[in-house]
Image (cartoon, rainbow, N blue to C red; front, side, top):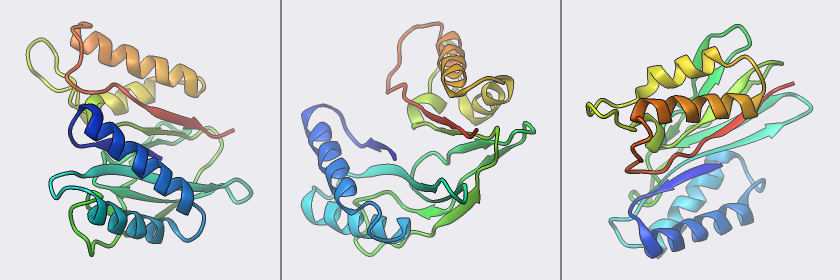
Length: 183
């Protein structure tokens, strides 16, 4: 799971802690779509109307190498296949916390040896150059295609690409990424 909460400071931190605890308590009890539907109802009932969370949640079955997932208003993750092609994981629904009766479509993919799954928040894709141009999805894809080593190397390459893009001028948002490479 990776998530991004609206707002900043203590209220956002409390909401994130609550979302994390709730997801930990319900993870594995049902399919990802049902788990997020339950989480959404909880967040709607316990937060202000203007607060929400974007989130990606996936469950990997190591024996079958299949992952069931839901993208809830989050930047769709990038799946770089071993052949260099990049797919986006778009199945899901709206952000968590705004629409009480929201439903979430599940996606399912097979993870093959050499595949690289990269999950990032908008702080990566919306990082600005000094000329006010966003880093964008295509540069994320380019960075993932260029990285041929393991997950830690791909992470370092992506962070380096974003830092070079912004000329290390700092970020208005977070610079977070979760990268998994299948063996």
